[in-house]
Length: 464
Image 1 (cartoon, rainbow, N blue to C red):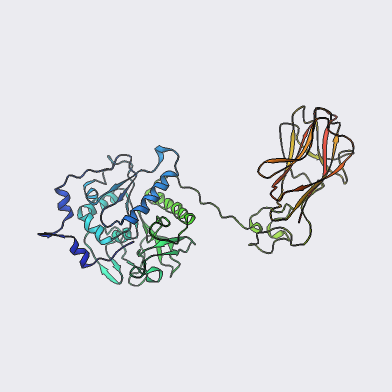
Image 2 (cartoon, rainbow, N blue to C red):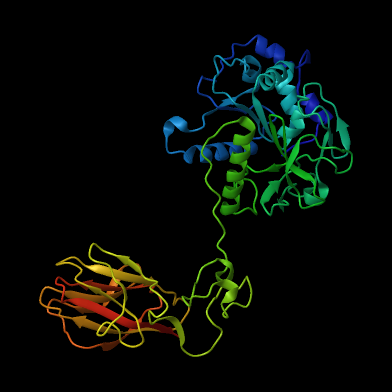
């Protein structure tokens, strides 16, 4: 956010008896310096830094502090008035050993340079020359330059920093003309990121040419620079620090948090700090391009006939009527997760252990009172109904043994529970309805002797 330099603004800075001089005022006033040996960032809060831009900057810094659970490692910042910028010896590395960055929020570059004055300008440039860094947002970038073009008029104010060597210009009228309407707009960058634009500078628009430094992000409009790093300076035309619904509209909370993560990374990079930056959440990919067998048919993504393209979010086969979500005869292997302290379930072969074909699943003598589980993930969400069928044989199960089958929908719920003294004999076919909220099924066996065990075959989940 920036404002034009006008004769009206300049005349407002005149006092009775002659021109106002902040340097002269500071020289006659005792000014304390709030910076300590543990201060990491200083933020300018004097005239020329708008209250809204300050609010956004504090939102950002406070959010960043909250990302670090260790109080001793949180980034520390203090606020500096115009007089304090001139009074604090920013380059005093011995006293301010942790100080890494000076932050100039958005607002009015003319007022900022007028109030910071030549003394503050000297302090900031000395800080930069002695290993410090600078973050200027919007008007903070105008202030960093030696000259700038504002609404087609060139300005060369005496106390602009001049630390950024290229001339800049704004506003970008096609994005948001500062003099029309609200003067701001949420705009899109070339990375797909959305951010608030409010009159910030760029280069290569109408009256400027070469960029100094590295362009980190560009406006979608004409590919103009939006975020630039130059040596130890971070300069942003867009307000990456803007907080949604605080003085403007159009930015979501998730977009703002993404901008905060991006900005925190840029500050770390520019200032040479290593404060905690949360990892950007990965977007949820459609079912047909997420590398997962979502319908448990052993076919993944575009290899699954249920996928019509990479953006299809339903991997289920495009057929009518009942569909096999899972059908395991154990002939091709054992793809179940086993758990429990007992002897694990495994693929079995041999008479009495297989219902048909050559293989089934089973476990013998898990251990007295020590259960063993085999479990499988299923996906029946979106169907109207689902059914689990299987055949099972319980061998030699006496009063000390148990067998159960359950599904999981946030908690495990039994479909079949055969308590102590379970039935024995040949294979028995079972069928149970499953809710479409079920995400896993599980078989449990608790058998204590070498002559006791549980066997399962032809496990099938059908949905429609």
